[in-house]
Length: 157
Image (cartoon, rainbow, N blue to C red; front, side):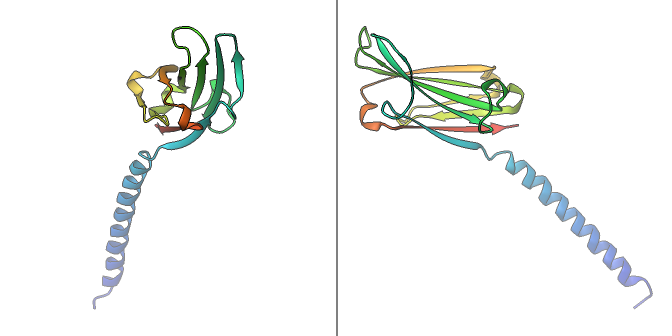
């Protein structure tokens, strides 16, 4: 062996290791961005708080926000689900789910909301402003499904 040959081999080995670590970190970082933040809330006429009751309707509300405990105007994202039951009028005996999606527009890539009825809504960054609203008439199909699970998934930039 010539003098200094083993130190050259060590330098080549270190260079290969640095390249491998760089490649792994680059791909692991981009893969982590594809993992959504997932939250689940339940809305139930028997358990959720009544926020409004009139002779025409009863309204319950459930909320999910991220990070937990944040105020709606300071959240990365939030979802508020209002359940209404109509006692009179054209929609007598029907439920209505109102889903409000909001948050910090610059941080959100995509939000998906799924209801216990199988209904799903995906909002990407292009169709999203500070607040997004979706109304859904559930008629009588919700009765056997209570408590209704609402799953929220958000992909953050």
